[in-house]
Image: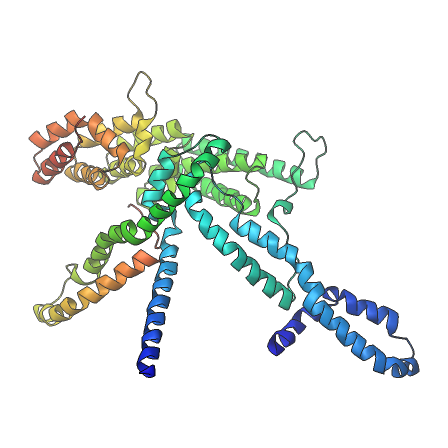
Amino acid sequence: MLLAAVLGGCAIMNRDNTPTLNLVEDKLWPESTAARIAVSPLVFPVGLGAALVDACVVHPVSVADDAAEITSDNLWEDLKWDDRYVTECAALPWRALSTPVLFGAVFLTRSLFDIPRYEPRRDRAPPLPENSERTDELETARAEAMERFRSELEHARALLDQGQPDAALAVARALLGAVRQQLRASDRPSFRPLRDLVRLEDQALLVVLAATWKSGNVREIRVAEYAGLVASRHFEQIGSILTEMSASSDAFTRWTALALVTAVPAATQQPRGETEPWPLRLLRKGLADPEPLVRCALLSALAQRASEHPVVEIVRELRSDLERLAAEDPAPLIRALAELLVRGLPRE
Amino acid sequence: MGFVRSSRRVAHRSRLLLTLLACTLAGCAVFERDNRRVLNELDARIQPGSTAARIALAPAAVPVGTVALATDMAVVHPAAMVPRAARDVKELYWKPAPASRLRAVLLFPLKVLATPPTFVADWLGRSLFAVKAEENT
């Protein structure tokens, strides 16, 4: 208790946390020295009592709402019921158990130490009214930044079309860095410029991908960085880039295109039009690649995920190509892998 | 007699603390979405469309989800980490490297001795902590 009382001194060192003591100081502590000496025997115990009341009652009560907000923001905000219903249900008992523990810990810490007031997440970036005619500096600055980003993106695309992939890559990478910096500075996903920024990021990433392989730096392409684009709204755009890559004379470039397709097998489930979806077309072409290592790497990538439903559907679609490989490929390993995939198909 | 009883109590409490610690640490691995295979599968298959449906399903979903989470923590994720740990040990000790015959012969028994504890430590680490999945190349 003594330790807590001593530690409690940390919070009450700040005048803002001692309203009762401030009141005693304002009302009972005179200006003149003689008067102070005279009233000291009375004021000192009263002041001590006021300090104790501030430390043990007033200040803790004042931080209770902060503790509640922090607990709520950390445990009960941003629950993803739409796409993680079962996970959120499983987490509910743990959140319920953690709530009093977190609240208690935060309450105790804020009661003992002088910590600035907490700004709840919902208050951090006040939303601009949707149909507001008033434009403040922030809105203007964001609009100007978006305009600048769009013109940089067009500049990068123009350089790429003109056959200057190195220059296009430099511009696109600089743009990507600037967009991501802007994204990190904005923390309201529902804010309209942020959605536009995310789309701009994707478009810049597409230009970086195309410029990277056209400038001969295909080994710098990290599949994980671009795989998300395959299953996004930019499905057709990345499809045309990967189709170009799959026609390259360099085997590693052709394999990198296939690696991006196999990284997101669900993309092959895109609704069909009159022609075969490009991911399936590329995979079929990959199975007939002149380089045995490419064929082998593709079969291996499919075999590693053979239990996943999208991959089962891919293997079903490519069954005839796999059966031909299993029967006719000159490399024994490729024949074995192809046969493994076909045999692993569940019976319909 | 009292001494024996109190040491048993201490041993029991130590085992309890270790189990609790392991369970807490095991929670770290399942904080990563990729390490919650059973839960992800259930999330993909069970997506109630309305708030009323979510509330109605909740009495079943909470225990099912808890069991799925426990299964991920204690069974699925550790089992999935066995081949990764084996691959790590293979990369560390058994990857062919240019070395003289003498060195290879001298190091062989050390590698044999070190393989099991390294495998166990690697597997435990991968099972308990959220280690990022390796990227494709």
